[in-house]
Length: 203
Image (cartoon, rainbow, N blue to C red; front, side, top):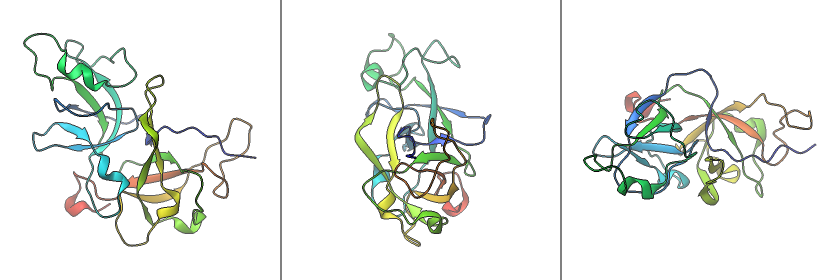
């Protein structure tokens, strides 16, 4: 049977984990759950759109939640962070005073869906690195999830792209069949290849 087609970006594997709070930069694009982010020079987090290109880049982790000014650790009402909110906060607050919760441990594993239309090397691709790609738009404003997927046709053994394949995810589809590497939309376990907080970017 077919694998479920559910695009949600990077979903942490080892739950519960302890996410870290970061301020969001004052400008930028909408930010979604499951999206990869990085540190700006200000120390705030920002979108990391270069993840779709080949080559070694650094990233901090994946978004797992949000909190707004005055709410501190409480979740925001919106399922995603609307960039327009950054300029409409209460008087006296900086536009960057919006918390983003990030799964930022360099050893954190995530589950991500592979795209379709390309042939992935299956289980032999474990240990290889992959770029990611956006599916039509950057995110679903209803669910709040990032429409981010593994670029299944662009794996490489040594070019150090954004994530490294750790293995096939042990999940079951809604029809009761097991997730399979041979079908479209396979779910894989990955780690960030060159993590911002790891020594020399090692995994």
